Length: 295
Image (cartoon, rainbow, N blue to C red; front, top):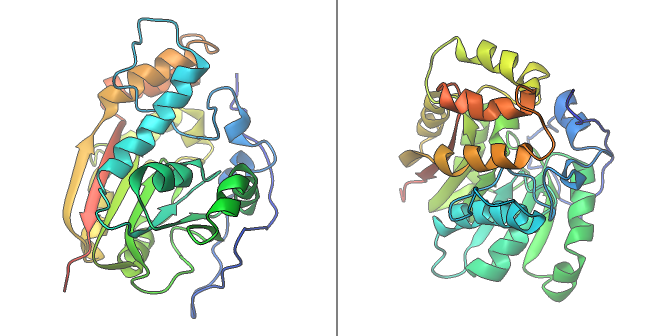
C-alpha cells in the first residue's frame, strides 16, 4: 500500500507578513506541497486532534487497546515535552517553525504562559486551516496569536524578534539546515533559546540515506530528508548558537507509534518500518536544544 499523502496549494494567512528586506520567497518542495495540500494530512486517522506528529507515548499503556483519545494525548504530550524545555519565566514571545494547523501554538498559549506566539508555515493552505482551527482563540486573544507565511530557510521576521523558537516534527522537511540555523540565530534575541524535535539519522554513516529510502516511502519520495544529527548540530554551531544538546527520545516515540500503526497497517508494510529503522540504528527521534549567546 502506498502513502496517502497527496494535495496542492493556495495562499492565505491570518496576518499578512511582508518578506524581510533582501529575502526572496522560498519555494515549497513538491513533495511537501503534495502532503500538506487539499489532502490535509491532519485529517487522516493516523493523526487526530489537528496535530501531525508521531506522539510522545511515555506514560501511555501500550499493552492496552489504544483509543483516539490516547493518540491525541500522545501528540499533545510531544508539544508539552518540547515546550517544557523552554520554561518561559516572563511570558516571552515565541515562534513555532512549521506550525501546521496551529494547535501546538494554542497549547503554548493556554498552558505555558507565553505572552505571544507566532505560528509560521511554508504551506499557505495549512495557514488557512490554522486560522479556522484557532478561530475562537484568535477572537479572544487577538494580541497574542498570529500566523505567518514563511520558510524555515527564509523567515519574514526582524532580527532578534523572538525570545524563543521551537519546531515539532517539521525539520525532516527542511531542505537546507545551514540556512535554517542561520535564520533561527538571526530571529532570536541574545540569550534566546531554540528547541527542535524531529526524527534524524543518529550518525554520519553514508549508507543511512539509501537504507531509509529502501524502508520508508516518505524518504523514497523526498517528503522526508535523511538529515543527520551531526549535520544539524554542526549547522547550529556554525550559525553561532551555543549550548547545543541532542537528546534521543526514540524509546518514548517509536514503540507507541508502531502500536498505533498496527491498527491499520500489517507487519512488513512500509509505515511499520519506522520501528525497524529505529531498532537497527538507522533512525531516531531527538529533541535538540541551543541558545543564542548573550553577546
